[in-house]
Amino acid sequence: SYVLTQPPSVSVAPGQTARITCGGNNIGSKSVHWYQQKPGQAPVLVVYDDSDRPSGIPERFSGSNSGNTATLTISRVEAGDEADYYCQVWDSSSDHRVVFGGGTKLTVL
Amino acid sequence: QVQLVQSGAEVKKPGASVKVSCKASGYTFTSYDINWVRQATGQGLEWMGWMNPNSGNTGYAQKFQGRVTMTRNTSISTAYMELSSLRSEDTAVYYCASSPYSSSLDVWGQGTTVTVSS
Image (cartoon, rainbow over all chains, first blue to last red):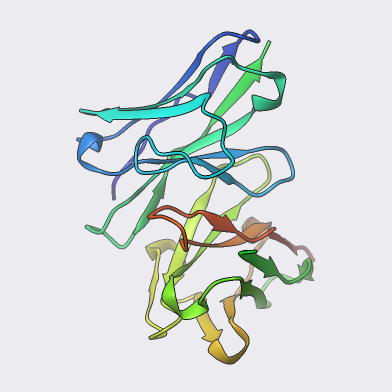
């Protein structure tokens, strides 16, 4: 089945820019979705279809996708952005219709 | 507003079964697939399968084939996920999720904690 690879952790100082990558074979040909999950809470969609934001998600959250890497970019990072972030694609070629990356822990220093 | 509300926490013994419910409101239940995702403590998200509430068609991750059953009751806009032959490794939070707004999983239930312990 399709595999998505994320770095286990990313650290950034407040006010700086965080970039979280999601690697997959020719991922640029797929739509990538990103979820934020804080401790004890359900995941929340922050970016869908590579770069679109749901209503209520700050413009500081953006996404891109090309080649073998998709990237979630969080500008002007705030303490409240500290969370786990997961990328996700749909894979109709196997029984594993929904594929998640392993998750990245964003730490705000 | 659009929401999915799940049933409460469960404690089960090894070998037993558990059935978790997921009630949809604020949108047409039969228009969007329901997916089930679980998360063990400290671990990532693990997709279990999907169900089309209109047709009842399902698809399960190979890991759960033979142990999981996803059903629905359209009259009360509720989806169910039943997992059998429980073992300690099934201890996790189980989520339902749907896609009424976009092509992603844009609405999630609050999660149901299932603990398997003797």
